[in-house]
Image 1 (tube, rainbow, N blue to C red):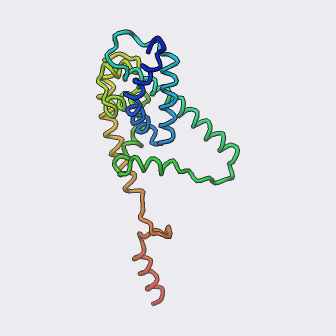
Image 2 (cartoon, helix red, strand yellow):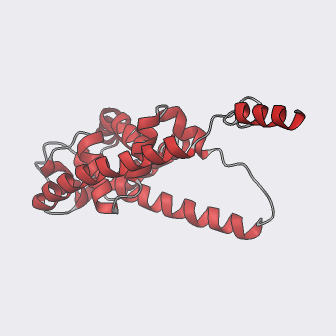
Image 3 (cartoon, rainbow, N blue to C red):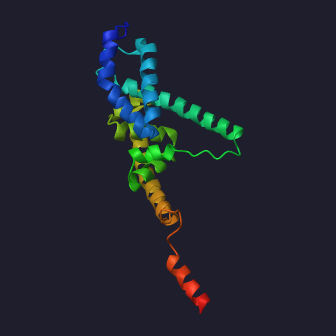
Length: 204
């Protein structure tokens, strides 16, 4: 692959594309964005293929390191694009369907809370957590993917786990206390009985 053999690169894609996609999907929550990340990851991998060190047992850490960098850039570009649209259409109310895409992937309350909590972690802690826990890389492979010492991965992973548990519990409390049940018409169901009682008292 380092010498530019297309067949070798094709085998690399066949072996790891699904793993790269799953990682990108979990991090972004958006199937379309995840597909873009996969395409850009392998384009970048082909461009910098000569940087692969001879004797590496697996190229997955290297690929996921590229994926992490690509996702940073894609997310940054998306934020800039949204900001530009908001400046151009400040008075237009355009529905944002991104949350629906997230819910298709994370359809449970707990997982949505985890995703929200994950977004509140420091970037390096978040990347270490997703690579170690969601993509199953060991400490050494994660360190290789992110270009950080193994000791940093160990210490930050432990901190990220503890912080994520704390933030997830906070997100769940916030969700459960701040969400009111609504019926099909969008009306709040809570308080109907008290409203009915109030009406009866008024009639009396």
